[in-house]
Length: 459
Image (cartoon, rainbow, N blue to C red):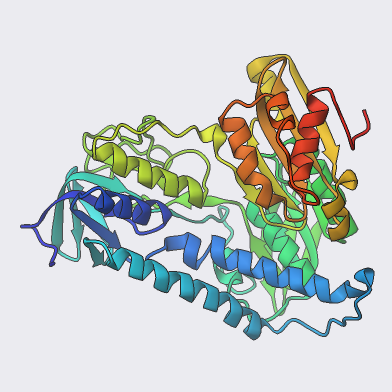
């Protein structure tokens, strides 16, 4: 059905990424009339430039490491090289299959997909290439972009994750500017592919948003992998000359590399989209909302990376569903940001839900913690991984934080989020039977220890 000024909608969604398409799909399921505006491809950053392609690279990196290390498991393997054209064919194939599936899914519902750059021209109106789409509600879901630093121009051998995803060779030396999620994931990929890697992070530790114990374990693991890092040091400038980029750090040190990857986070895409002109409050580029994801303008919602908080695809996805259900009058329960699982897919993987120990002490005062070392977990020994499961509980109360590091620990985030979100006590989880031999047992063992009855753990 054509979208024009004479077509009133229940919901007009601006942006077809994780939050936007989830909102459109759920709204259509609920019988609402929906227009979905997207200037690029459905699926947005997550599907095309973020979550999916980067995790495909990380899996290719894991395969490269397995080829190198076959002898550790009694398997004679050799590692020859990384064929980046083959890696990209694999990665792009994964993305293409998921994109085709998403197109089919959206097409199976009565959703008017409008291709083009949309702009909010009134609280109830989005304009796309001269056409005006009017809705009782508008959902802003315009996503994020890869940030850089003032004075640091992207181009040539200086790039963000956007350009790194299509790199046609393995650079011998890489400096990664930023030790957060994106930085450590790409550092892990480049090292597995054979690059010499140095991470530069201005904060005192890598993955500084995680529990401090997790940061320390990651740093130990990265040292073993010969991934260098400089923490607590600022960036000053970068200059390209020939085949080299020189990175100058605060204090005068210089690092020479073949590539500088700028991984300093992502910024909200809101500039020039008419939000402020339509009366929507914008603060430092972000769109603040209440707990029901409503902006200060009646009928206008915002979801995903433009809303202050965690910039995670699954957060945007959940928010999109919530906004659709709220618009439909279902009165869904507000999303607890603290209960959203977080996974960093470097090697070793990091997974966490809830409060860090420091956050828990600030909120609850007295806390209890335990760390269960994966050295006592049979499956982790089979995988030859090191790490731990750390639990944080309010003194005498429920578990408020689960923090895990080790190979494949991201797969344990499911049970961890149930524990935190359902306010489970250590004894509640300790009484459950966890399958053997699995890494999932580590969660059970950690809760046994915190409940005062450690089994395969030293007190």
